[in-house]
Amino acid sequence: MRRLLLMSAVLAAAFSHAIVPAWTGPGSESLVKPITTTIRYADGGQQRNQGAGFVVGTRFYTAFHNIQAAPQQVLTRRIVIGTVSVEPFAIDVEHDLAVFEVPPELCDRWCNDLAIDRFQPTDTAAVAWIRLDGDSQLWKQGQVTNVAFKAPLATDTIGGCEDNLVVEVDKPFIPGSSGGPVFDATSGAIVGIIQGSFTTMNGRVSGYYKPLQCVASRLEMASLTDRATSETGL
Image: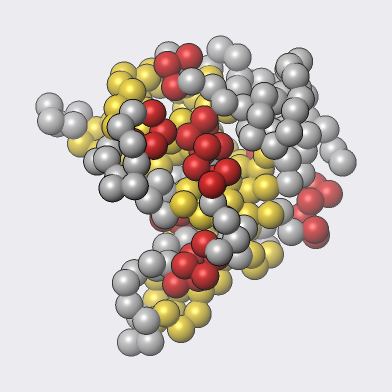
């Protein structure tokens, strides 16, 4: 298995403390891959979603809305990473998360020795991310401006990841960036998954991401039974 340039840390089980790549170092870009979803509907309509995701270990992480269908009858849905059709291993629709097992034919080139690390969202102030632009990958950087909560979910308790925690940054994420990783600009640790952008009350457009600690805790609770739901996108 190909190893990336790594920073020293403690390896443990999946969703535990992990080694992470330096975001300016060789190999960081190879973590980020495009994901494309093509959906055909019974009424003849077609939908095409393009986003990003990243590989940690043998799994590919992304935002659920990259694979989500509209609430109408779906005839076919094809999700592609690399050139391979895939279906999600687990999803969390409420928190906009999806994870896939990397197909064997891609694993030799894509799989790595990384694992999810539980960084607190307040542990970083400057963050960086990769913007996919065709075959090019451009580094962007911004500042954390707010650790906030989206609308509480009925099944959640108040506070932390269970209250749909997100982190706001001072720059928007352009369409197609959703699902890509957010890095701590100092340590190089992956600290979140890009989810989108919104307009604040003062008219500024900000980006927001799901903290990686929430990805770990939510996907630990996801099960293979979620797959039937993900196939309809509902």
